[in-house]
Image (cartoon, rainbow, N blue to C red; front, side):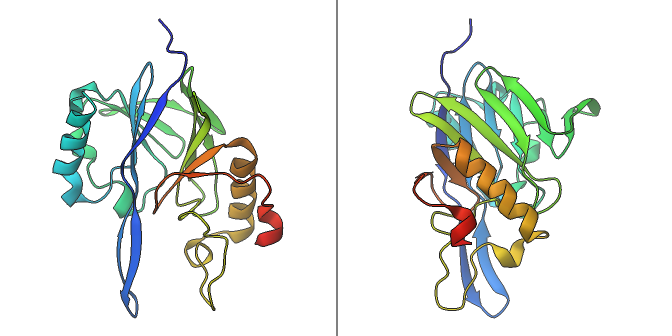
Length: 206
């Protein structure tokens, strides 16, 4: 039976903190999607293994209950616990793989179930993907580092929030704008979920 809406639970908000010149403590956001299929989006750093297991338990799940793992991109602080889910289907870049079988390759979009859709959002790197989730509150976009955190479009002093990490700034701007127009909430790569303010025009602020 189809589930009318999915739910999105941020198991661990990501963070990124400078510790000095060229030194940073960082971890990507770890997100659970509960729908007809249960999905994880991004898996943090290796030391998050026990946290993931415990947070799943708090949500009534075991690791074996996760059908699909979606990796928004390949930065090491987002892929740290892939071996926690050896029997899951993994989706990353253009690939859909289960164990050693590449089940499918997709170009622009992929449907996980009736509530979970994946689209390509290049810019941070050229294989980045985002997840659009239909929830009772609206569309939640889980974006990885397409968005670093809430207000990452605001420049503080001379700092730039997302641009230094971008492989293609113009392409990332287009991807950010596309998500901004579709989503009601965003789960960014290094912060907690935030509401989209449609009065903000990202193409003008950036």
